[in-house]
Length: 478
Picture 1: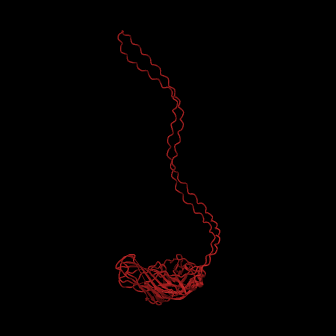
Picture 2 (picture 1 turned 90 degrees about the horizontal axis):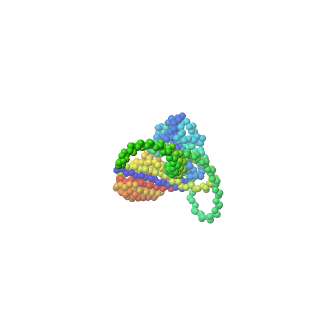
Picture 3 (picture 1 turned 90 degrees about the vertical axis):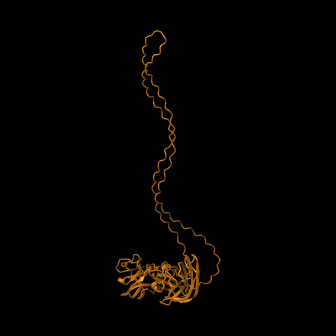
């Protein structure tokens, strides 16, 4: 039955008496083959020795506290993970010359990268899946004094040696190079003195002049002409013109002849009327009357729609900056915490122990039933200290069954030995049957660890469950 368990190691707090450490991941890494114009900045390993290849690693020291001086660098350690050994031998590590800067995605074997000062000489490289650590204190102190000289480290193989180290692009074993820097402590903070009386507020400084306004952008093109407005109503008709004169009457037709007089008798019927004479021609047309006055102008048609807005003109140049304010007082150095995380998908069933280790933020860490660097479930301790407290918080992401009461134990190994269980262990309350359920546990003690020792965490479940559970683990070392 599959059980998805996520672990987030929130903080491994190192608070030693003499100083505190900060571990940096590389800002860029690559390797070059002399005379070869290809770039290998995205490779998952840094190849050294094969075809005379040379490794390059650089760290961004601006992540260190501001105002840091070379005298405050107590120790700096460069650590490389040996991923593969083609031919065992030794390597040299130098700084890259301040006159030959390089870029991860552009550097090639024709870039003319040259060595600066020696960091380590004839360091043995014989066994794969092991860490190689070397003292880089002098190099880091020099870069703190002259930041522009920081072009990182150059890794060169001696005769017959051919090896490969993990790069920051490697998501399989996920052991990129690290630079652990131990800083000198400022000592314990003294008691807070009593507050002095407030001084009189100084007058407000004059406002700096406004920057010169940029030029007005070029006007956009004129919008398209709107459609023609509606036609106005017809004006009032003018008065009728004067009538022309009546034409002359046509001539009267001839009178018909009288019939013979008959005897006077009764009055005879009237004779038929004679035919009507032809109509006279029409008189000439009278002159046209004058035009009437124009009707009133119709109302103005509605405006056409606006054309589209032209493109925005280019932005004006920025005004000059105001004068820089005074530099604030230098703050004191604060304690640095190691932020480490792990994501486990262990497919756990009842009983078997699953081991996992803190790794860099954003990288996955799958648990394994055996302890080894090749399983990526062990890490090296960067600084000697005492493990004094283990805190575990658990939250059910999605419900499942049956309920489970997990236990977590701190594992420690002396030197490069495989870790064994310590006295720091605790078991949470019952979890799993309801989403959102939370449980926690803690333990205290004193487990002494030295720089270079190995650490791991062991998870054991009482039963197999289908619940998804998030764990937050805090391990304090002082």
